[in-house]
Image (tube, rainbow, N blue to C red; front, side):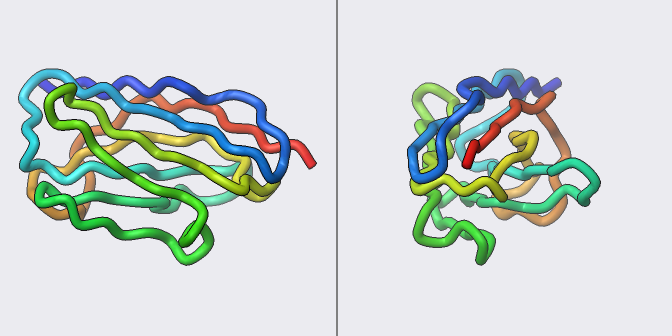
Length: 119
């Protein structure tokens, strides 16, 4: 069983920074791909960023240059550093993990953490 627990969401002003984290436990390894997805009200869930077991990263076009995903394998934790936040970044952010080393179709999900960016 795998558990993913997000933390660090909240309210931030536009242009400011926020970091969310995801602590993984259970049968999850440093070789598993991890990622962040988000879902805004009335919209479909979308991939924000992912990181492979080897450390390669991938970002949605809307966050490239502003967000950074990283992982601390010793702590089984994945981070999403959000800089230059925009109101359109407002969403529930979900941590996800794949069974494989690349993010194909997440097998495991956290419960989500709300991020609200005020203008």
